[in-house]
Image 1 (cartoon, rainbow, N blue to C red):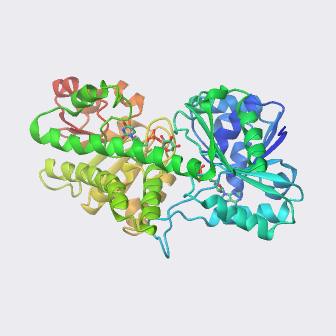
Image 2: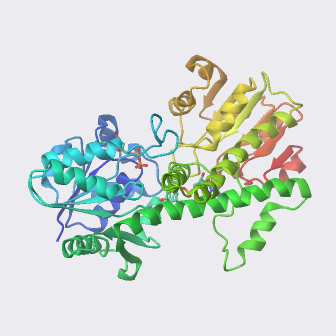
Length: 461
Ligand code: UDX
Ligand code: ADP
């Protein structure tokens, strides 16, 4: 039986996943480690509302388990040494240099972890890949462990995370399925069984799927590619709807009632974001290309091309509607996170829309309930489109939505936060320049009501 788990990486995946394991398995000591001292200090903050990741319900889970059997630490070696099972939950960003630049996953953090585990481990360990990794990464990890280790035995499992940010706690408590891939040897099977036992503390056995390692790794990429493809498919139709007078919400409802298609993931938007979709599809494209499967690569790449188009056309439409110039105009952004109920901004559509509008010399005024100025500036600086000084000159961040919208020429809704629907839109209208434009990139506002107030209201599709 597993009694001691270490998780390397205290981010959006490692943090919530380990908090739930600790909550549901009081007999297992769970230690989450990270090199980032500030992040660990925030996880340990006396006030549990200050943990570094915002997820509905997460602070209650942490409050219950922290100090009992859930610990956060920067002492990576000690936690590896003590653990029977080590989860790797470090980030695997898209490479920004060398071969596979802009496409392949950068595995340097994974390799560093593997080397560290090999150096420290003095008894047999089960190593679990939690981060989304390209197919066959497990063999690279195994290679490093076996060749640089202290002669102890390692079993590598793939246990991809399917939680979506914003609903992480719900998703972890009642997952559609838990997927565990391992070696098809007796030792591999034993390791799989041990991890199944951990999840079986709260997940029904029939929802725990076991496969070989490669199927598990590829299933994760495929799940994200299929989900992203649905969003790009409905977004492709949104543009056609705008031209023909069809309504994309009605189309989505009509096709979603076909049980073979289903209603979920058909919300047309300004484009998908987040740390997974784009990265995982690029990964799939890269793998396909590296096997010479060009048609397969092109097929999936189109999902990304469509998404880039959707973001760009949203910004273009704002410029066109505001009489072909936004130079010096105040554009208010409601929302910066890549979706509601998270403070994560990775690959958020808002970043790219802001970047396009800054190129048109607009003045951007942002309000997001959970994202602050430092993050917003750093997201823009990361693109390296212009100097950091120009970004901070062009973008202003508020902690009050009414202030952000005051005297604006136009408002762009970039994230579907529930609170936006409840605002006093008459008050916002009264304080804006006229005509007052609203570009709803999430189709969350009531078109009739907005038009009745006097807004020039534009939605997607
Ligand atoms: C995703 C997968 O859902 C999850 O299983 C995986 O483990 C990680 O990647 P996440 O990135 O947290 O999760 O968010 P998700 O809810 O999938 O949304 C991704 C993006 O698509 C968001 O920007 C969201 O706003 C957008 N989206 C989603 C739409 O535009 N329309 C939809 O109908 C659904
Ligand atoms: P994800 O969304 O996949 O959880 P994050 O970027 O939120 O990604 O979290 C990954 C975490 O892993 C970061 O906090 C980072 O500091 C940590 N990390 C990366 N490499 C190592 C390492 N070698 N040892 C410990 N922590 C690491």
